[in-house]
Image 1 (cartoon, rainbow over the protein chains, first blue to last red):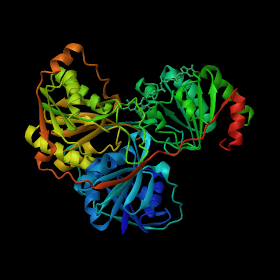
Image 2 (image 1 turned 180 degrees about the vertical axis):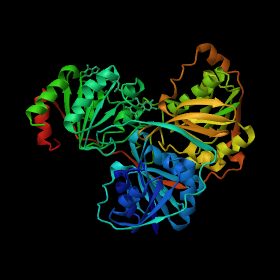
Image 3 (image 1 turned 90 degrees about the vertical axis):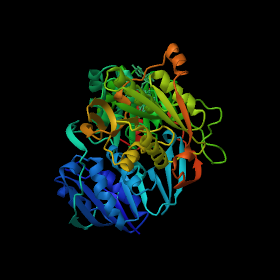
Length: 314
Length: 248
Ligand SMILES: Cc1cc2nc3c(=O)[nH]c(=O)nc-3n(C[C@H](O)[C@H](O)[C@H](O)COP(=O)(O)OP(=O)(O)OC[C@H]3O[C@@H](n4cnc5c(N)ncnc54)[C@H](O)[C@@H]3O)c2cc1C
């Protein structure tokens, strides 16, 4: 059995989600190839070739692949599936965008956001905002799977696979890329960060979010996250949303400030190793998952925390 | 322009799902059910497009048990013109739902389908993309803004890292994300009017689609509970605890 992993990248760099997905793939088969579909992504393919356990890297390039158009990715992956028994994609927005198309074209189910490989046809995945774990057995000959990266350890570096350029497929005639506005940040990426500091509706404005959350994140070398309420209100960009329908994170340390802890938010962070909550309402549900809770107004608690971190040599 | 809006009846988003003790699934007996929040956003969008004059007819369709008629009545009360229920008591996979929707689309010939990006029960985030694939239509998922014009749609999407804008030719599948709009509450007069709007019921088995399950559910279990934590008194206490825990 051979397995294809579709790399997560932004054309410039390979994301750690790929390494984690390779680990899930290696639980299925020793024969794991990685597809890099992008534009100007040779460097990404070279990086993927260094993942330990990868047999071969396939590189497909076109402008449409560079923009991640789902139709274009599907057109590359579906013909490749003649050679593979399973395809695994990190469950990012991009992965969720094209993977179901691949499944439908192959007339198979997608097994969404797996957190465990039981055997080559049996998988565990969360449903109902992570309040239940469903074990499913697939009867399809070919498996199309998305992988929740936080549930798997990253495969190590140290491989030396070959890189093979393949056809970029038939493109996406009915879809045109217009433009994009990407959030630029010097901070670690939310998905793979060791520490995440998130702010909620309590911040009250974008200025306050930046004044309170960002310096604390910078002091901790952390990524910044937000609740849906904070994103909806425009305090933080959409890309920061942690939760059932945003990003799922599982850092060593998650700090929730002025976040109540709705089911949908917990779904995105409750697998963090250590959770800290700062909230002035001692009954807020976030305290039910917090290892360390500080019942306080963030307006005084965050400056005090900054001072205490300085005193501790941070 | 005619828009089809598929809607799903699911556990209310405020209710925490509980796993059945025999591990056969999630307990939905006596649990409040509502329209999936993302479907509500899709209905709202279609109705707003109609109010703006970009759309002439909004058809809501649901695939599910007879109680899904209530969900369709909600869509009608929000402003959909008519509704179709594809009735089945079977729990269907996204691929099967997509195939049934394809059969509905063959009869209805809409110019666009606007639907939720994800249902909050299965959390698959797959049906829209699958439908686009089997129809060979373009897709614009996770929409936070939609402009409909003759023969095309300009859609702003929430992607990893920010926003992306695509132009898709119609017919197309568009899936709604959270920030597309804030759905209205149906007014009492509109709820009354909705009772008189047409609602057709068809058997899922009558559409010529194989309803087979590709995935067999072996068990449904509760995730591991987090061990209880402690409350700390001061920020300094917090820092010393975090040091002890080895995360600083
Ligand atoms: C379909 C759907 C999907 C969703 N997906 C997500 C998702 O992915 N992610 C997500 O986060 N949410 C999601 N939500 C929204 C979720 O239900 C909650 O509405 C949201 O998480 C609330 O955000 P919040 O905690 O910031 O705001 P609130 O619930 O309003 O909480 C604010 C908290 O701040 C505290 N506070 C106020 N002032 C202070 C102060 N001065 N100092 C300290 N504490 C203070 C309050 O005590 C309160 O606990 C979703 C909802 C739906 C319906």
